[in-house]
Length: 162
Image (tube, rainbow, N blue to C red; front, top):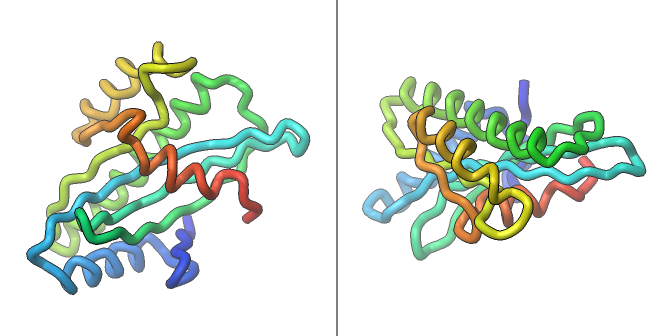
């Protein structure tokens, strides 16, 4: 079972994350919210590992956010393509589990996936297929420079020790 971390609440199950998100929304129900899932990774060849981090962010638009993340250390993944696909897969799996738990609580929220690919750099050639995969899965896909869920929140925890 995946355990999420929140800087304030500590370690939480995904069920607890969903309950906390609902409570967060209930404190200001008339505000606008975005629910963002993003993953990023960092390879440390010296240790022979690649650390993947997936983050769930509930953004109260214009008024801050709350986030939760988990780390998944793996044997080193050198292929950029494989890392991007693993990141997208982790985000989509989290979206699926999150959607299921929200539906059980009679909650319907639109989820968006932030992908760490962009028009500049080595990931440019992967945009069409990764974005297509995410949108065909029923979620909105956001790429760099707007994919802060992956490139800022998840990225922040890829280099930290667990």
